Length: 106
Image (cartoon, rainbow, N blue to C red; front, side, top):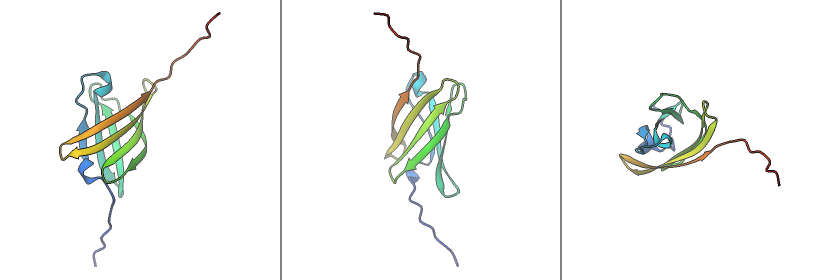
């Protein structure tokens, strides 16, 4: 007997996606795939091949959202990939940078 399991995965998002933006912020490639019945994400800076640390993956039938950390810079991000067509997604990202601040003398 065959068992069929329904997976609520964003099938149209499976594969590799690359931002088309000529900027340090846009030189990332995202690989969305299924591992052990769950959506998984790997991401790299495709210029220097540094991998992002991926966490907090959430998906529905039209989008995948996840958090990123670039170890070399400490930069954190939150990204959402939303299906627009079979060959295009909208990529919305928010980055958080951390810097030192010093007290101003009055």
